[in-house]
Image 1 (cartoon, rainbow, N blue to C red):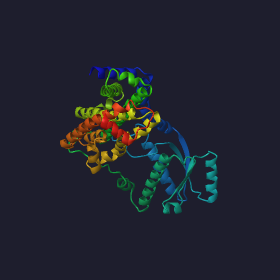
Image 2: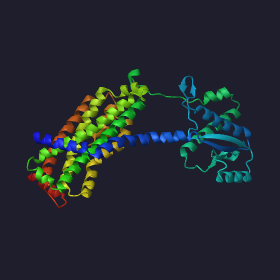
Image 3: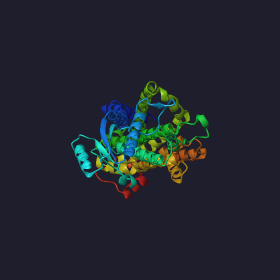
Image 4: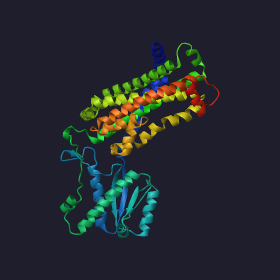
Length: 432
């Protein structure tokens, strides 16, 4: 244990004091912030833009109905706009503000002239709503911003709503009857736990964040163990270290040391998140507190540590077998493939936590750290025996992998210049 502690302490201090650790500790949260917040800021900035469009229809009533719905939706989407004390939920033109004009000239000459204005940037777009287009249920919106699919999609929804209202009005329905008939209906899923049940959207987001933290940390620091062993092997420092410590002590020390670095980084992120939540997120603190229960945090720690030990052991064996960075990259993909597949299927598992693939993934040791944690988070009433069986299988697999990879590690760290084959690895296991 003394040698293991010395090796683990060296690995920990060497990485924590490095510039890479400091940069990654600050860069990864900033990257996540940039990916999530920056696009929203740019989108909000786009809402201040005013565009000019023309609605062309020989029937002025149709054109006026479309213009009325566009302007009404834009009013509903203004910041702070509320109905009955609650934020308006109906969609609207959230990407840009339109100044709408109406034209009843639907001739080809008019279309050519409007197209020319769009090309010269004198007009941002025009909607061609002729009777033929309305009957075919296919209207043309000529604009330079054809790639703004969200904005154009919202405009299409608004125009569809306007045409439905116009059709109902032409049948003799009153405005109040049309409004009541087209009023959206909200269907909210309720848990049998009642008011104590967490918000499903918040629960999904929180669980996904924790799963990605687990995945990224295990992936980065498991590979870190492999690179550390490969570096010492290629520099021949490994031979000097073997004079004072056994191969098992070296492997255990590296796994513990690098794992402690990962826990330190996660702890820094958690502390920073807690400080931030005390300020800007104070309104959401009650929901987050209801989601992140102590039992869920305990499960996160258990599956995180078991997953890290399992994959770090495999990565240590890979680092001892290979002789170059290129060989290591080829092998690490095979090692990490089960965890990558777990991340790919995690959304399906969130929606169907009792499906056969979810049950298999939560019991299969190489995917259970992510899948079982996701099931526990999304399904509080999961049978206890499944959790116990998953942890037991993980512990048994870790024990078997430590024994197996330890034998590979013992021979592999002293093998140079030759890429190992499967028969040679079997010989290493047999004679180690």
